[in-house]
Length: 150
Image 1: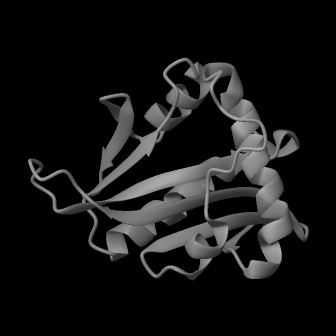
Image 2: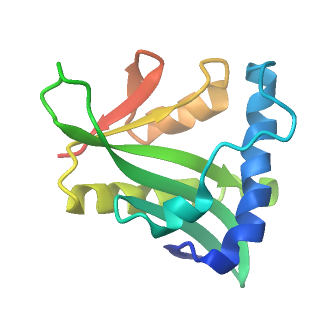
Image 3: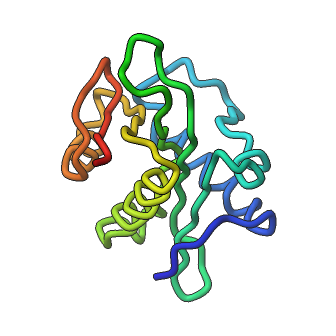
C-alpha cells in the first residue's frame, strides 16, 4: 500500500469518497442534504496548512484522510491544533490497516508542524468509528476526539 499526498488528478475518485463519507454519516444525521458536499478538495490539496492523503493499492485509490492546522480555542494551553477529517476507506479494503496507516502519516505531519494535539469529529452513535479512533489513542472531548501528540 502506498500513502501519498492527493493530486488534482485524484479529484474524481475523491468526490466519490466524499459521497461515501456522507452516506456513512447519513444514518446518524437525518438533516444531511441530498447532494451534500463537505470538503473543498482543491483547497485541501493546495493549502500548505493542510495535508490530504490518499491510500493506493495496485494503482487503485482505496482511502483518504486529511490533517489541517487550525487555531485552538483561546482558553486552551495550545494555540493551534491539527484537525483530522475525510477519513474514508472503500468497503472492500476495510479492516486491512488502511485508516490506521493514513492516521499515522497525518499525525507524523502534524508533529512536524509542531501541533501538540489532534482533534476529529465523529458521530457518537457510530460505535465502530469511535472504537477505531479510541484504539488509535483518541479520547472523547465534547463529542470530539483528541490525541495529545507528544
